[in-house]
Length: 283
Image (tube, rainbow, N blue to C red; front, side, top):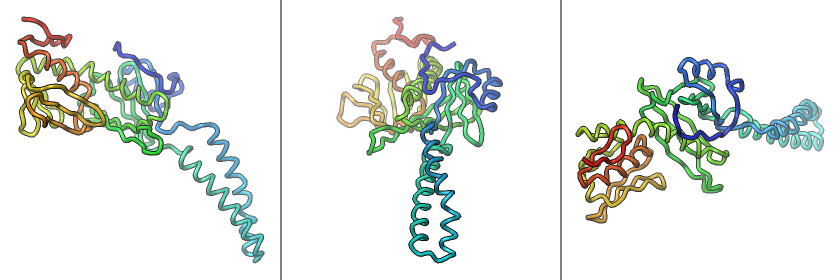
């Protein structure tokens, strides 16, 4: 069982799950259901407003048609205006707040995740996830961030979800998924580097000696710091002003990448990396 914390975005039990989600989770042995995130959670008040606005519009519609056929000028105009206003407002509530949103619902389990939409339910066990890509778009009006979460499995299975940062727990859910994948991928990266191999993460190539991008190689002794902020990855150099940069969404497992580079930067004195713990070990 993983020791990373799971944050409840939408608390619930297995009985609240759609049958197909429960079925694929059981088939993949994902364990206990922890939490879920709906791209558009429906508020009961939205349904109430839909009824309050839609019902008068529907009732007025036949009278409006009758008045138009009878040629009652002012009555026709008033009825038409009220009908359009009621049905237009109801349609706005229906589209923006009631109908299922574009994107997948995220169901977090003890040993993995299921991303479900109206078309399909895609299960991904943590041990089967090879890549997680995260990108965010900040809304200028509200300042909230919408996160795009893309998971890729060993068999090439891929699933994507939009996480609304304005929903409580949305950011924590993205961090939880990233942390779960990092826990499993980071030891593999460290082991590969320790045995003289190269880890390729998007545009970056990482080795025990240094990091490279687009033909430019920087040894660890010349790396001042690695920053991941504002949707960008910055590799600052100590020997010159210009460093290496990339869009964070282009770097799979960007959290693991940041931790990998942080640990390798501290190994210039000849220490080696323990493949299990990932900690520097003196020879």
